[in-house]
Image 1 (cartoon, helix red, strand yellow):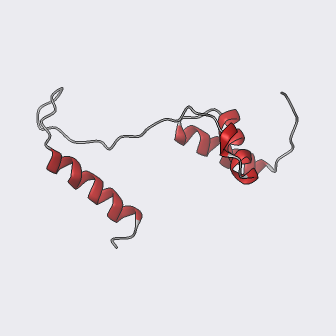
Image 2 (image 1 turned 120 degrees about the vertical axis):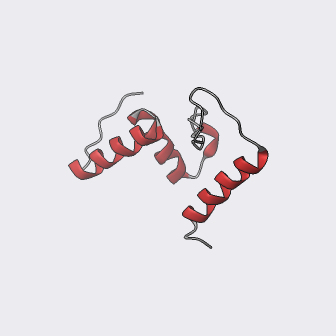
Length: 85
């Protein structure tokens, strides 16, 4: 269904930027935001983009990684998200 919503310019720019950063369309982003505010997750879009951590390789086009390496990447991300706690 189509509707027209007037948003402040700053809010629209921020929404577009956040949607792009998440790999979503503006429609997907706004739908998810409204559904979240309504508290009804049953109608939320099911398509989401997964962001995997990047792992550097010493040899281009090859990946030699262990479970310990993966755990270290996740631990570093968790530390970054939670301020080192």
